[in-house]
Length: 220
Image (cartoon, rainbow, N blue to C red; front, side, top):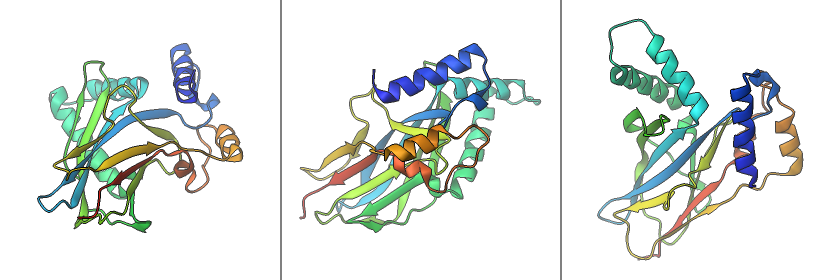
C-alpha cells in the first residue's frame, strides 16, 4: 500500500467512525489536483489552469452546510457564492501556488474563470485559471511549480486516477513535463505527525511535502 493511500484510508476511518479529528496528525484532508499549462502563439507560458478535487469528507461537509443555509438560492447559486469566497481567501495566500523559472520566482496575476461544482462522485471540484503576471519565454530553462497549504492542514497531491495530471495547451513541439515526488526529511514527517488539529504548524511546513511539477521546452 502506498504511503499516500494509507494516509487517505486513515482519514476515512476516523471520519466514518465519528472520532474527533483532533486525534489526527497533519494533514486533515487532501485535494487531488491537475494542472493545464497554457501557451500563447509565441510559445510563451501564460497561465496555469488548475483543477482541485476535494476529498469526499470535506466535500460532504461543505455541501451539507450549503444545503442547510437560509435563503432561496439554488445549490448552483450557493456553489457560485462558495467559489467567490474561496477565490477571495486564496488571493491573500498567493493561490497556494509557487512558480519558479530557472530557479527564479515567477509573479502571478489574479485567478480568473473559476467555478466550483460537484462531480459524479459528489466531490467538489474547484477549477480556475491562474495567469502569470507576464507571458514567459522558457528559453530551454525549466519551469517548476508547487501547490501546497503552508500549514500542511490540507495535503495537495497530483491526481493518480487520470492519465495526464499535467497537460499542455497550445504548447510548442517537444516540450516535456514530469512530477517530482516530495522527499521530506524523516524529522519533518515526525513533526507533522505530532501536530493535532488545533496546533500551529511551523511556517512553511507544507512545502516539504509538496510534489513538484516541472516543464521543459527546447530553446527556439
